[in-house]
View 1: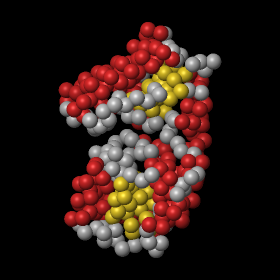
View 2: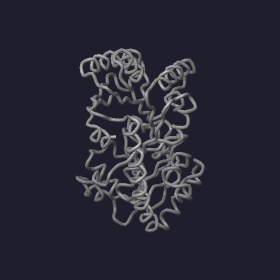
View 3: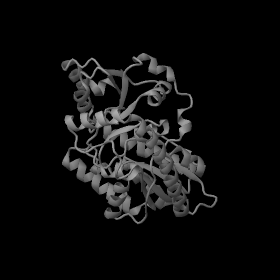
View 4: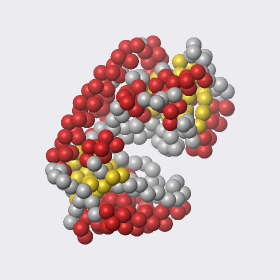
Amino acid sequence: MHDIRELLGAEIWNYSIFYREKILSPMRYLIQALMTFIKLVKSRPDIVIVQNPPIFAALTCLVYSVLYRTRVVIDHHFIWSMSGFIRNPIVKSFIRAVEEFCIRNAYLNMTYSDDWERELARIGAERTLTIYDFVDKSWMEGADLSVRERFPKDKKVILMPCGTGNPLERPDLLIEASKGEKDLIVVVTGNPKHLKEHIKKARRLNASNIVFPGFLPDAQYRGLIATCDFIVNVSDEPYGIPHVITEGLAAGRPLILSENPSIKKVLGEDYPLLIPHNDVENVRRVLSTAIKRESKFINLMEKIYRDLKDRRGMQIERLLRLLRLKNLNLEKG
């Protein structure tokens, strides 16, 4: 969204405390709400673009909008109550009620997935908009390409970024599907704390071709995106579009992905490297297809990148029309 921020001339403001400490969540959201409200009152933006989750940030911005007669745009990375992250039914019902209130009262609800947009409309959003996630090729500038030298040149490097340990991601299936493949090196990046079960599994299977380098510095991560042979995301997420898709397109790397409706809308209904069901045999089969026809898929990535860039440009034009921007003070929260 940084290109949108620049286009709107908006200020970005982030405030986080007690990150990933679940037991402190009530205190965290209360403090964040207070600090957000103070920031808004001091800066007095005419439009606030706020991210969900957490939905309590949007609720705080809506209180501000009522008091100061401004507009709130909620940028839904997903609908929190439907994401699969919240297991407690009471908490889930409470979050759902807050989300429904915010969605119905926001000036605009936008998201990066067509399927999430459809759900927003079903809940009662007055205005909805999908803006696809996008990474420009300039993102690859400054990539440390020497990172590829860590791995043998005669082997294919398969990269699966796992970030902070999304519980819906399934590196375990990729580990099993590629164990013992002498021509493959599988690199699973991310915090070892959240990957410890997968690390144990790789050791238990004696899968010596699986590497867990932890979190890489940004330049090295970009370098690995640029120089790997394939990028993989195996996930049980029903609607999400992993950010690594747009990074892979910027680098021109073929993408092997778990199939879901949102991904098919971005890459095309007939995209050939989708895993139809998340099991070891399907992952192994799609991986084999990708390796056999690698050059064809590299050319396909460039075509998809150009198409996505054009489609997103039209989505941003619609955003500007919906906001009817005329000398407004903007803030992205």
